[in-house]
Amino acid sequence: MSNWIVPVFLTGVCVYGLIRRVDVFGLFLEGAAEGLKTVVTILPPLIAVMTGIAMCRASGALELLSHLAAPVLQRVGFPAEVLPLALLRPVSGSGALGVLESLLGAYGPDSRIGRVASVLQGSTETTFYVMAVYYGRLKITKTGHTLPAALAGDLMGCLMSGIVVTLIFG
Image (cartoon, rainbow, N blue to C red):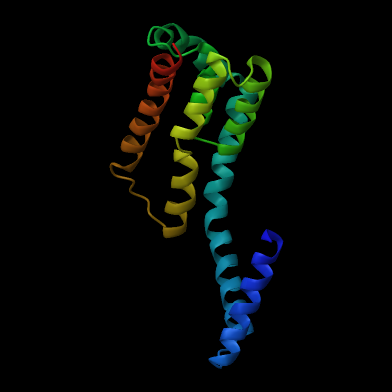
C-alpha cells in the first residue's frame, strides 16, 4: 500500500491541475529553478561548516576537547565516551550519527553509554548546520541571540541526557 502513496499523490496533483487548467509542468520547472537558486545560496556556508568539521576531526582537536572536559562532566553523570558526540552534534548531523553508531556498536544500545548517547542524539540539534543553511539562504549576517540560545539548549540537552538516564535507569 505504501508503495502507491507517492505515485497516487503525484497523479492526483496532475489531474487536479489539468481540471483547473494550470500549467503543471511550467510550475514544476519554476520550482526546480528556485530549488537550484537555493542550493547555490546555501552551498558556501555549508562547505565552510563541513570543512571545519573535517579539520577538527583530522587534527585531533575533538579528542583533545573531550579529554579536557571529561573530569568535569563525569561529576554530573555524563560519560566521557559520549563527549565526542556532544561536541560534534551541534556541527554535523551525519558526523554525530557516525559517532553514535560507533558508540552503540562498541557499548551496545542498552548500556549506560548507549542510552545517554541515544538521548543526546534525540534531544540536541545540529545548530551550526541549521544556522549555516537557513541564515545563509536568507542572507542573515547578524545572528543576535540565536547562537547563544541554541547552544544553551544543546548544552542542556547534553547535561540532561546523563541526568535523565540516571534517573530512569539508575
